[in-house]
Length: 179
Ligand SMILES: [Zn+2]
Ligand SMILES: [Zn+2]
Image 1 (cartoon, rainbow, N blue to C red):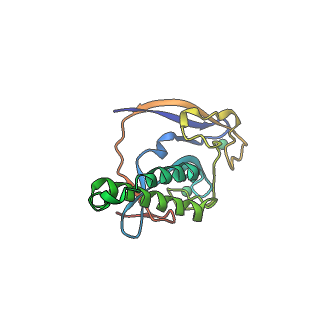
Image 2: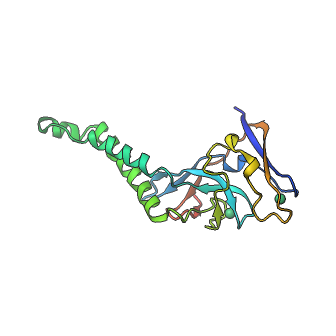
Image 3: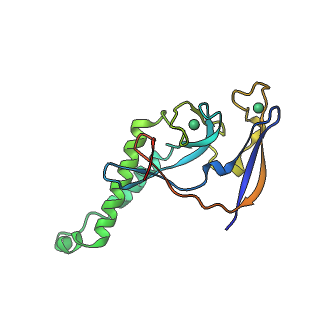
């Protein structure tokens, strides 16, 4: 299935990039190699000197809400507790809480220290004002960071592309690991 892309071009120099840099699935792996949800956003990496996928830590409240929801399923009546404790549903809720807690601790430890998911640098900038969708980026206000000609980045619909990418994995510090 082909997907729409957004092309970025500087109006003053020959820099260009595409929203496809954020494509593909990315996950953290914890100490026991369990996957933890990773959120990313298009941003600017000063090390890569390019538009890059940057970690996103803005879902703390959403995660807390989800943990509370799952916790409400973990209060069975005493009569059913043994049967229930061994049920798949119980384990599913516990597993979900565990994964959400892992993500929550990543956010608490590292909010403000977001990494570029291509090179691991923390020298990054969320130039697109928190827009997760490349298509909703209003480029008129977006300066091309570090541009010698002080250009602005224009965002335009690109081709529809079909690309299959292998998932990428990161440790809890945002360092890419071979899996
Ligand atoms: Zn430029
Ligand atoms: Zn980078």
